[in-house]
Image 1 (spheres, rainbow, N blue to C red):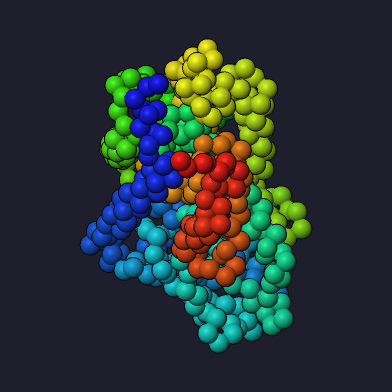
Image 2 (image 1 turned 90 degrees about the vertical axis):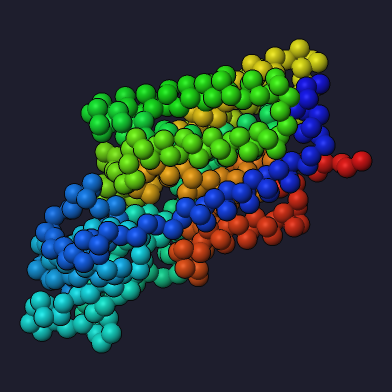
Amino acid sequence: MEPTQSVAKRIPRGWLVSLGILLSALTLSGVAASPAMAEEVSTAVASQETEEPAEEEFEYFFTGNVTFEDEPLEGVRITVEGGGFEAETETDAEGKWTIGVPEKDAYEVTLDEDTLPEGVVVAEGEATIESEFGLTSRKAVNFFLGEGQRVTTDIGAQVLIRVINGLNFGLLLALAAIGLSLIFGTTGLSNFAHAELITFGALMLLTFGVDLAVPIWLAILIALILSAALGWSLDATIWKPLRRRGVGLIPLMIVSIGLSLAIRYVYQFLYGGSTRQLPGATIPSDIHLGPVTMSWIDVASMVTSVIVLGAVAYFLLRTRIGKATRAVSDNASLAAASGIDVDRVIRIVWVMGAGLAGLSGILWAYFRPGVSWDMGFQILLLVFAAVTLGGLGTAFGALVGAIIVGMFIEISTLWLPSDMKYVGALVVLILVLLFRPQGILGRRERIG
């Protein structure tokens, strides 16, 4: 038996993951505060046209519609103000407007009543709406005018909309969680650099699909191949040598945290701190399923996730390498004694896990939407929560946990502020583990 495996038996895996999540949360709290805006930006008043602002100029956008009795109103002035920033625009012929803002903050969106057509008025107190961003970089603020004509959505429709969004988010989260779970199951490593594998896929698509103008389908293929190659390289140059030296699991986890920080700030140095858009990321939602509106990107994301997850399930259940992977995850020493090449299995798991993380990053870039240097780190705690909730080291548990986390995050916005929905997901994780410490699909371990 290798020294790493003997240490793993003496240290409960749950404590390792808990310690890792605590360290990541402390790191997140240290970097979450955005830097102060430059003086010239804080005093600027941007007069914008009704066309879409340049994506590279702003990272976040308010959009909306102005209608009267379901008819669009053109030429209505909209002002967005907050955080020392102010900008205005006018609605187009379809009653739509868009304003870019420099950072996530609370803003006041005001409709100028003097620009409304004669006879059209706004109810008292409804000309100004306080709004702030949630998970995505776009926030819709609509003004539906006309007594009795305001468009409302009943609670059932709202739940259905959030269920679909939660399923979409949960599926892309599952791609990252399954890779992380397989790595943990075969090596015992809580890999905090997994966030940078997620970011890497999106950055490679940005590089080839936008900067080098490669056809998008080919750029996606290149990004996935490079993501898998990165997983192979990391295992060959860092993790395998450390395993052979018998480095313990806690030092390995600390190495992964340091590696995560190093790679993340290399991304920032190379790509900058702004958020950039992928081709087709802002296409309109043309698909209507009852109260649910979706874009073709949303449909493609969900279909792709389901197909890939099905392929992973087939790989684990039907192929020899997949069965060997499950054997190593259950008991690496027994698998080695049975003639399984454990190092080869671990190498394959790293390649597959990195490829899945890269695909997850691409889908996450379209879901947000946008590509940024720390986008993987933004969902790292959710990935760990999904893995822990489903059961440590179990791929199918990670899938179940990810869907539950994604669903709860979206549905919780019905009664929780958008900025607190991540907290709600972690509360659910704690409650489940209080009653089932091994997770939903994890096996209860015997002590003593």
